[in-house]
Amino acid sequence: MSRRNAFSLALLAVLGSAAPAAARPEAPSILCQTYPEAAVCAGRLAECTTCHTSTWPPAWNEFGLQVLANLKGPLIEDLPNALAAIESLDADADGVANGIEILDGTLPGDPSDTWPYCEPPAPSGDLPVSDSYDFEHALRRVMVLYCGRSPTYDELAAFRDPDVPREDLYQSLHQTLGDCLVSDYWRGQGLPRLADPRIRPITALGAQSPVGIVIADYTWDYRLFVYVMTEDRDVRDLLLADYHVTLRDDGTLAPVDGAIDSPGGADAPGGQPLEPSRRAGMITTQWFLALNTMGTALPRTSAAQAYRAYLGADIALQQGLFPVAGEPVDVDKKGVTERQCAICHSTLDPLSYAFARYEGAPSAAGPSGIYNESRPEQWIPDWADNQGMLFGQPVDSLVDWAVMAAESDAFKRNIVDTLFQHAVERAPTPGEQTEFDAIWKALPEDGWSANRAIHRIVDTNAFGAR
Image (cartoon, rainbow, N blue to C red; front, side, top):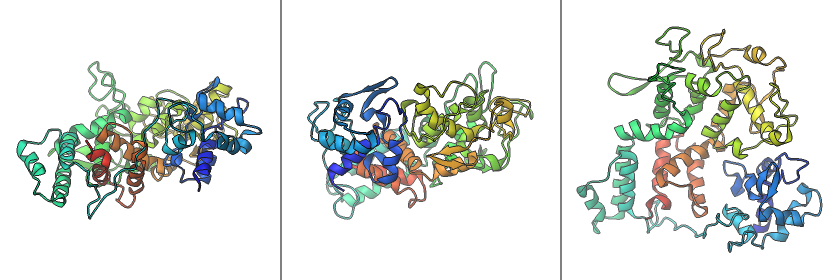
């Protein structure tokens, strides 16, 4: 595919809402269904910010205005022609042509978002790292990130010895990394900090609340996250686990089956009361449901948090929009059919239907975090068993939702993006995108292991460059 065609197709994805009368971003999914190899579709969808500074009220950046000025017919039909007409222009005056910015993954309407693209140095010889890879620098990073300390003088000495072959340095680096990944620091501090934005602990309401108000015990969530993300276990269990994880007396983690009784009795918060057949890993713990669903009729917050935390798409930022025809129907009369709301709720509400049968707050049906088949009808008088959706595809239950999510490119990309940004403290640059994409695409062949993904991240130029 030519650069011109790739560029034209990429922008087709982000302008579906350019016409105020439509205000529905179907174009991103059309692009990604037709051209899944496009850079903007690598485990995600293109975003509206390519052309827009706001979608309600509609407002365009300089690039979007150039597109509008060159549209001669209906948006979808004429957009490629408009893009072809402006691809050599420089809308944001940053010195990089519009077409090049799209292909490189930067925004052609934002002068602050550009990158001097350079082809990364390729591996040479028998090692998967380039000749410019700095092993001493990489060792420092590995030990601080995964062991929680700096290397000693003796540990650094071997990496400074010019007579030590690079093959030996490589093996030693990965041996150190392997040791760090089973360290108390990584399991007790490193991984829990990665889990924080997914679990969102509130100490005033959690397991050991200083004011005595407990809605659920989030230590179950942390244990499950750490367990799944260590020892080459399958990271899909973040969404698929039908078990819980307990802490043994010797300090090790172990899975346990079945529901877990609350220490305070059957109707008290704590434990894990949900039956295993309804479990979907981190998104059905009592804490997740109590914190996010609470007493809401349609659990939009639960769906949005699951989508953001495990699929990397923030609907509030208009990411990952797969609008469903006929939606939103506003089942709970919240006014979401208003034009300024519908653009997001046509994706969010169908995402939420699968969560509707899980109790958030305690009710007559029982404690938080249980499955209640009749909950939607109890909360929503006009409930009509609406079809749950994910990625524009139907799902019949939250377990189905989780299975589809866990097998998706979005899930793979989000897992590796989390580990990559932890490792190098930033997102991959356009010049690093090929290395980055190769890592998340390799998750299945690596047995869905977070550890193996980390070993691959340590091999990247981003990690080994000063």
